[in-house]
Structure formats: structure tokens, C-alpha cells
Length: 124
Image: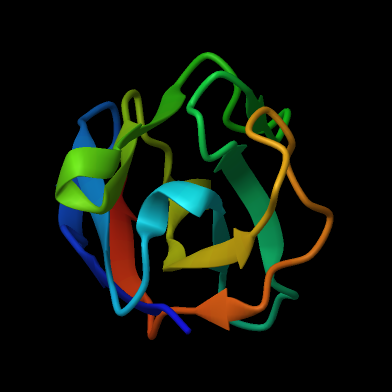
């Protein structure tokens, strides 16, 4: 089992940048694909970005494509979400999630392990 802890959230002005981190412990993180999700007040949780455990495959929601970048450092057991040109509609609690997967370039359709989330608030 893997434990996930998000950090890096906070208040940022529209057009600014923020970097979220997802630190893992408990198991070998390099065999886990990782995704970022977010949930705004009154809305369903939505997919933001994901990365394969090799780091060779990434996927993004259309709403963040070209603005957000997901990356990972398996030596540090950490996945990052670099958020640039943020908008007020990016305001949400951001969660990272992990799924053990045997194929290094694959991104799973579901994730078993979730962090507690970190709040991101973008002011206009």
C-alpha cells in the first residue's frame, strides 16, 4: 500500500503560477502511475492530469492543456503538478492518486490510493 501527501496549495492571483507536490511513502513509488484530480465546491471531482510510472506518458484534461505540466522524480518518490497561467476556475481542492501498474507507459482508468488534498484558490 502507498500513502500520498499533497502540498504546495495556496492563494495565487490569476495569471500566476503554483507547483503542487505529491509525496509517496510505503511502497516503491516507481511502479505506480499517478494522477491529479480536483474538486470545486458544488461540483464533481474531475481529472486534471496523469503520468505513467516511467514518466514517458502523460495525459491532460482539455481545460488545463498547455498551462499545467505533470512530472515525476521517482528517486524522490514525488510527482509534481506545475500550474501556470492559472484562472479563477482552477480554484478547487487538488488530489493526487496512485495506481500500481505493470506496464511502464500505461495510464490506468482508475486509481486505488488517494491523498487528502490541498486547496488551491485563484483570485481574479
